[in-house]
Length: 305
Image 1 (cartoon, one colour):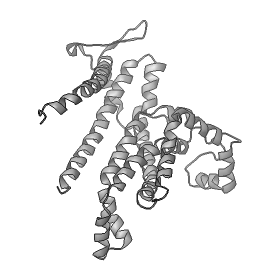
Image 2 (cartoon, rainbow, N blue to C red):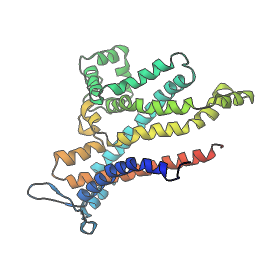
Image 3 (cartoon, rainbow, N blue to C red):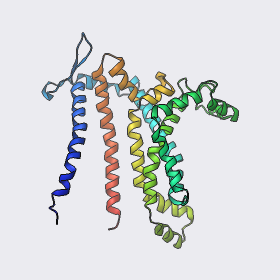
Image 4 (spheres, rainbow, N blue to C red):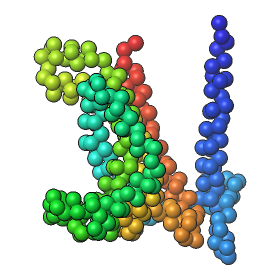
């Protein structure tokens, strides 16, 4: 009873709005990355016409992406931090999401409220709380020292100074990333686990599967889309994060790609290099997004109608 074009038309304003907020800033970054720099004022001169683009800054950044250069070390360090943080979020978040979705029948609403509570507090305030906990004399450092965790981490080589967690420790940056982004990982994973039909698990048990085999061969594959969705939701902002390392570390030895971009834009005379790094980071993240979209598309085709 409605024309076919009606519902797509209702989505048109939102689509146009999102495209404007994405395409215009992206083209502005491209104009700066392929532009020039005023030698006197040290301000970027964007090149809006693609025919006038200067690729020397972009090729300079590409030339730094080789082993042995400082930018290569930052790129590898960022991938290590993001990978370890993602692994930590999976190890912590998957059991929490699984328990809330499958076993917390009476307390599910309360647990969901507790999972949403971190969104009510500023991310900056939550990171500043870690400074009070891990600073010399802080309650968190006292607890770690009293329980012997600091000594264990020191002997394992995870930290270099058991009395100074805020002095350029990679462990502290990874801990801050996990703490800051894990709520964004748990919620989509919970939604995916909560939608799994229990009859699939009952069928696996009727066919002789143990509880662990039913979980590994039924629950985990069916929650793959939620797992990937949560991973994408946290890894994309992690790659561009610069304030978490600044707050809990502030040392050059723990800087990430986001710190380099912020340095070139606000602390140095080469904003064109910062824009070029932004474009390269966006291209790298686009590869991850294409893999995610391909996986989601294949999973949707495998679901029976």
